[in-house]
Amino acid sequence: MGISEAIVLDSIYKYGEKAYVLLKVAYEIYQSNLLMNRKVPGDFDYKSLTNKLRERGISYNPNQLLRILEREFGVIETTYRSANQRWWRFKDPSAVSKALSVYEGRDVEDECDDPEVLLLKIQVDIVDIDKLIDELIELTSKERLTLIDKERIKNLIFNDAQLIVKLFKETQKYGEEFREFNGKASLFIKYLTVAVKKLKGVNLDVIATQKPVDLESTLK
Image 1 (tube, helix red, strand yellow):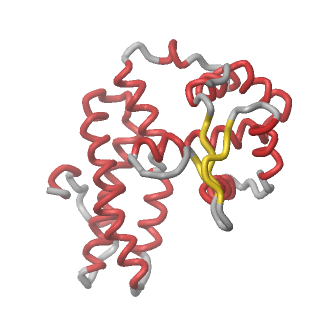
Image 2: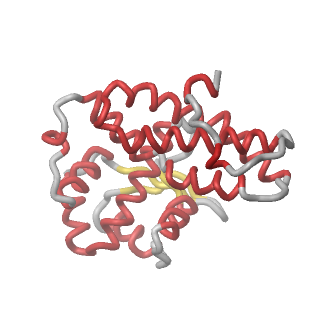
């Protein structure tokens, strides 16, 4: 049985910003797993949740709040538990999404008349392209690539890059609506191209001297 948006809001108002951030990050993980079609035992897991919280500069232990959301409000429920893993699912993901929107002072239904544009905005929000670019900058700045670095570059090529290019093809249709993402997507592919050359042992000049890379032709 699902839950109402009011129950989710009640949990946020009662436990404040910590509950809001925890639910928002957990919901982002859920959307990411859904978008990437990952076969996982729940909507979000403890490890991903704490990692995402740390990325935002939040270091508190979410265990107690997760327990409250599960037992007191019924917003989430455990779907898998082992010695080193724990997964939860949302009783009603749409109720969580609506509650987050209300708390943030926005109405999803009024935000955009075109459902395709709205879906694209959600997908663009889920793809943490800033983090991927930062990772590529770090990889391309290294004098030598480790085996782990090389495997990560391959993973970026065959997973993240495919998704970004797919989104880019769609966001280009809407011009200024996705101008920021399109610019970052182009930059992502530019750095990825440099990383691939580094992977092959090509001697590289400063990346800033390179010409912009065409996204679609790069991955053909």
